[in-house]
Amino acid sequence: MPVIRKKIDISEVSKRFSVSTRTLWYSKQIGLLHIQKTEDDAYRTYDAAAVRRLQQIIIYGLIFERYS
Image (cartoon, rainbow, N blue to C red; front, side, top):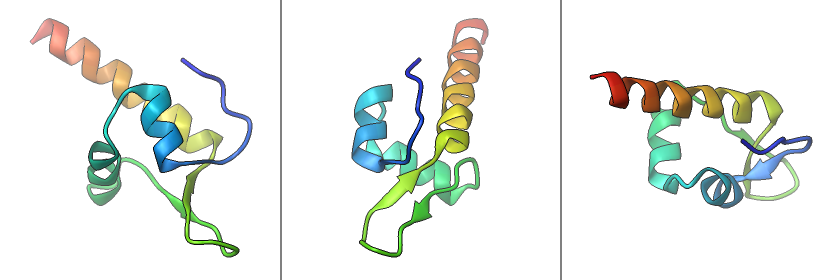
């Protein structure tokens, strides 16, 4: 999993983790992830904590998929 030291936007997160932006938006809607909106532009970004949480969600999803 990639190490994140700065805030990155939703398209970059989508590319790095091979998940759709729709999946990321859904995760936000149900409260699994928190997206920060910057004041200086219209981009929504993920900080290191949100990216770590996404890593955990992906890992748990893979475990669940394998053992269900």
